[in-house]
Image (tube, rainbow, N blue to C red; front, side, top):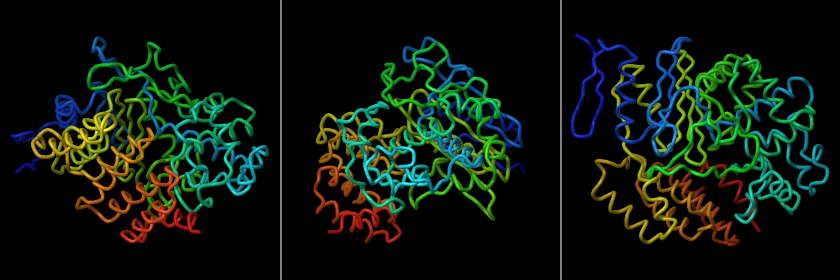
Length: 459
């Protein structure tokens, strides 16, 4: 008797037998994802060193006049930060720098705090450099001027995680200073060419014909919001080639890759998230998004499986889709995710927290058949971050408190209180910030980030 893979649909069940090819089963999942409106993009699945599925679903622009094809380049958001991290390690392997070099060695004009920050702090976001206020632009020159104006660190380097583009900006500038090349030239020579990434370009203009155009759920093309330089844009085959070159040690040694993968507890490294056994890389996952572009890479090395997804219509479902595809590949039951309620409520929440929260409660009460509430606390936290990044700190605190009241894992509830602390800190209310960091640590004593912030704020 054949084993069956159950593909769960809205209201009905469809049975996929093993008589179908693996490619057909993968395609069934992706076609349903496209029909549900949770995936418009390119996808590549490889197993055993061979690409077994490569497909384009949907359109290359908001007015849906041009179908996607696999030669189009995409922005990959934070996944791009793997390249600056790898660049730092390449220079280390060549003896051109040390991870223990202080930032002041390369930027003697920076204030005294730069003597405390080491390069290793930059690659795992533990430099302690405070987030720029919303009034500071995100251009290279604005970031540089902001860094020169910073009087003190938010916390001691190495004691906490702050996801801050300043860390990435500084890595790119160090690469340029040490290599005597532009960042784009350095990557082309030391990464793109050795990896065979012949169609990858740094800062390829997002409006160019060879680029997929990002768009929203109303079919409107999305203006690109990120103005800091150094973003890698590439087609799906080149992103796959990068995973293979990195994970099979053609760019970095095993030792360097392991160093680059070191993360602060609860935070990401330059490589996103990784797993090792006996010093060997077992899995590697990284998700990134930017202005309605979203991408993810996932590799499970014991079975030589790699999944690469790139979308120009962000739906926050690439990671659940990755899980569904892994279940197909491993003959497990498959659940294709529903739409994200976060994307549905975030703009309403930004316009009015009262109306946004009312809409959230309406979706939860009447529309769980269409919207995914399986990780409700995570989507509410994402909503709080969205409004908080736009300086709506009181609304963010209100949303985080709602998230913290949900039944959830201690680590997730602790993170909600940590974010409340961050929001109060942004409001210069150190007393309330300290109280909420302590609450976060009380709920989860392993929350090292909250512990670091408590130490930094303690009178």
